Length: 344
Image 1 (cartoon, rainbow, N blue to C red):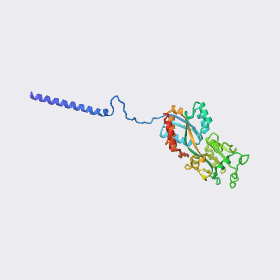
Image 2 (image 1 turned 60 degrees about the vertical axis):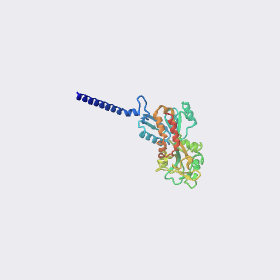
Image 3 (image 1 turned 30 degrees about the vertical axis):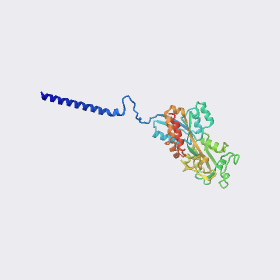
Image 4 (image 1 turned 180 degrees about the vertical axis):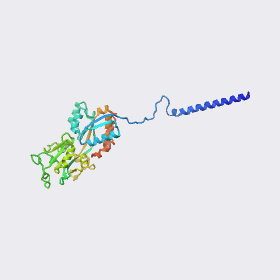
């Protein structure tokens, strides 16, 4: 009988030990959850910031001068950022592009000159308020470049005044025939062949409005739509001269040479180290732009995302120099980024 009591006591103690062990095991399993989050409460831990995959199109057109830079930005964006987005970049010319942009045919328009008052009025007629529904972004700085054939050994340096006078109508003769010897007597008595981009391009307008002060250009000037055509024509004629953006010269240095321009302090070659509004080549320096339809940026996430990339340190700031443009100060791009961030 006594042995039976002892056996029962031992069994009771064993059951108690087993029960306590089991309870301890369950408490241990629940401890991490109780320590990090109480049931019913929302976790305060920051969510993982995952990139949203976007799809759709972004339509850009406009300046042929800006085209190489914008096309490079678009390529980098589609490869490294959003391969589900198709960014289509055209080069109809600044004026031609703005004619498409004003009625809402484009998400962006590139321009190698600032938008004009009459174009701003056109936006308003189409329900777009400039500065509210349309944002202007300077992308970089370009240096207007005068180019001649590799065979031209005399006109490698010219003054700004000589460039202006030679391109002005009837400066020398009523038939607008101009000889190199008209510019400097020691130069050949051969007729100058003038070339440049046509009226669709902001580069033409910059040259005509800013450099020539809206005075008539020589009627013998051969104005072309395609910059590649200008490169070809000038490279094959030792008496030719043309004007276009620095980027097109940089990419064709094997065929052309740039004229050094004397703005009053000696001849200056166009290059990234001299192109700038406060630098030695300031006389032929100009900003280049892109304009954004803000309404589309609000409606289409891919348009806003691309806009933010284009003005980022990875976009225009990094790629400007690779395409023959001088980048703007970092603070300028940062201001644009904040402006776009506010649209989210």
